[in-house]
Amino acid sequence: MGLFDRFRLGSRTRMSRPAREAARTGSTRVRAADRADEQHLHEWVTARRGVEGFVEPRTAVSDVTLLLVAHDGEWTRRRVPSVDWAHRFCNSHQVPSYDAAVVGIPQRMRDYNRRKKLGLD
Image 1 (cartoon, rainbow, N blue to C red):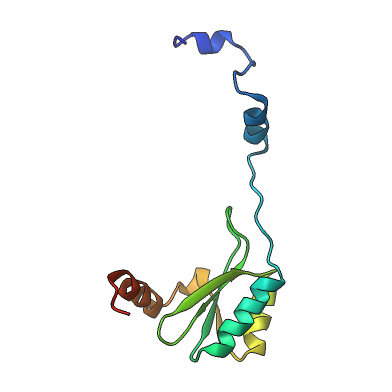
Image 2: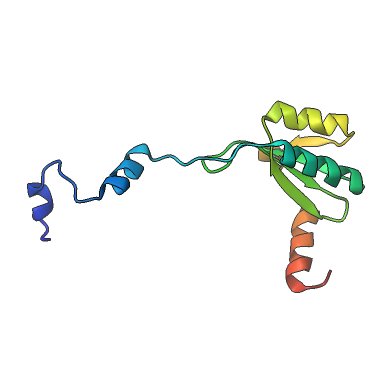
């Protein structure tokens, strides 16, 4: 196809039907939080000490998530129904909670990931 051939096509496109539909919607489905996510968070927070919660806001590719970080940097992240739900969950487990968009993630988590990558743990 030459440079000016694109203009001659007008509004017609050469995409297949599924490609046209995907291009038109431009959205993806994000899995919602479920009971298994809540159960995992509950088990994780009760099995570790020094846990803090970091509530991560909704983005274009994921829903609201709760990042739990233990005293040694071990962490887990799961989808949650809402920001309010995440803070209530943390409060009910006597875990301090923070907005990750404001405070970021703790250095001990990055150190833990580095140790795991290097095989020091």
